[in-house]
Length: 339
Image (cartoon, rainbow, N blue to C red; front, side):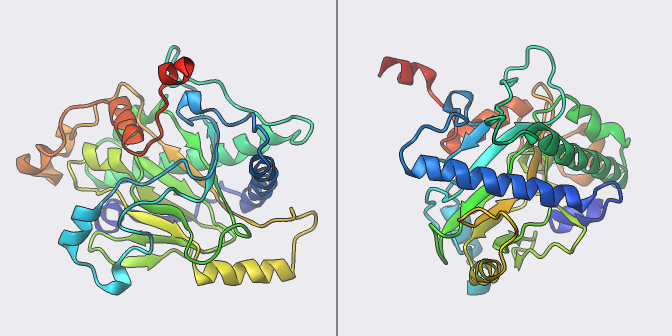
């Protein structure tokens, strides 16, 4: 486990506690939601679940809000081969995707990010909470076990990471990409890394996710049936002094995405929405806001003092807000109130 995160930044697991039927029901729910919310939004109607005042950390985020950091300088230095070059532009563009943020687990009382849960119309989605929590808690259990295994593999107590994850801002964060409004070449998530400690995904119904391993080889992700994909995030990189690097990845509308779209168009599921959406079954897991994410002294056998100096002392909340600000996801309440 530790070597996989070190060498590749990704890992595939099979967890016998995770019933993939829950994933299918969850994706059905999110396809229905994104199709409905998207239709309202495109017609200029108000979507009540969109909450910019909470930095989009709960509820819906519409398309053309999220944008990746610019990594032009790094990519220039790497001089990647054509096969390993991102499909998304070097100068980032706004992501042509939606997202929904749903909190999983308890937050400490008075936590600065303990925003109220956002629940869509109960008449339209009567089992929303049950389906979201069922799938989210399955992913939550899986990632906590992986965190324990990774800790043991790195030579520290198995609770070294999970103790810091207790009370973290864990978010079930499915994305939705309209496959009829967009076409091949559209950027659903530009070349980026995640802010989280670890990110976990179930299997999507459409391809389009690409990842880079530590040696900068680009791979198209194909999750086997019954498996889950995990990726390392920026907080994992900080706390291990760079022994684990945040995994770079992107999601683009590929020809493979288009082929899957056409196959499903020919064989729609019962009661399928009139438009097709690519839903990612994604969950971000974080350390608790007050956790110091500078390199853990217990892991000093995995990094050098020079490497450790790259990661100054800061809390998990500080790194979160720093990254959200850099990617345009923070919201100036005072500016809005003055308009």
